[in-house]
Amino acid sequence: MNACPRAWALTYGRTSRPPQSKAVGRHQQPRTFDEVLTRTMRAAWRRKIEDLYQHKLWSAAYTERVFTAMLNDALSAAGMDVPALYRHQKIRQGLKQIRLLEQSTGLRPLVDGQPRRWAYFDRLDSEEVDGVEFYAAPELAVYHQHRWTLIRIQFRSPRTALMGQQLEHLLTVLWALKNEGLPDHISAFRLKVIQWNGTKWQEHNLNVTPKLMEQAIGLVKHDVQEMTWLSRWAKADPSLNTLPLAVHHKHCRGCHHRKQCPAIGGLVQAKLRQQHELLRHSQSEATKSLKTA
Ligand code: SF4
Image (cartoon, rainbow, N blue to C red):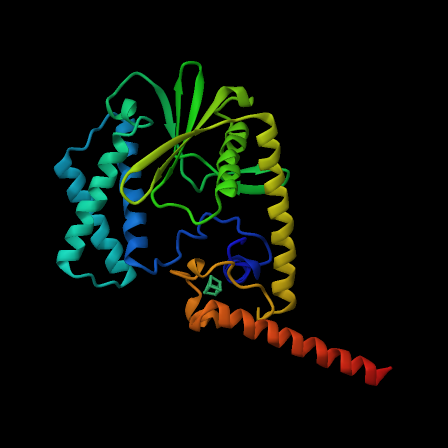
């Protein structure tokens, strides 16, 4: 929503309710090979972790077989044809990324079978706060030294600003506080983010303080207000021509709405045309009201 109000409105803003369904997002077709690869990595890792939870370990050969089959299926489903050599190269990269993830300090104790209480979650498991359903589940929660470490895993670097990301991560703690199986006080949690930077996994721990939590809750409330407002705007202008376009052209890359978007020929030009149109419209409205007066 913050990156591109128009894209948000096209995806969610014209329905009668903000996005609540688990199906949203899951059924959105991937647009690029990298999206297919990223989703497949996440899905394969998820299957692996589910089996690990039941003490079933995957061999390297089995991981490769499963991952290759999942990627081929995902490519067929997306109707993408990728040259065999390139596909093979990307399969190698995906397998390496999964292997390196398992060697991270956050995951290694689980993979090595060290005694830990732990649980895994689906990112689409939602919790409700003040009537708002939100999705901020961690991938894992690991109990060690009297506290739960909530682990978020990002298979690709996010496009949002650093401060926004930090607050989003903190919402994971809010999610955990609402989850029935976890404690209900913030001192029971640590928060760890494991993020792929293109060549390696980077791990960082975030401070969880009441003040930061307050800011994160403020962020949710602010976003809900913005969503309601944008949703009304989208309904009042079904053409969506007056809605703001993306903040930065990088958000247009891989956007599902690009083909039908005025920004298809360039974001800057589309914004200028939009400004021009709005100015022309307000001038003609002013002329009309002068004549009426
Ligand atoms: S192409 Fe760019 S401006 Fe258009 S909807 Fe997508 S992100 Fe927004």
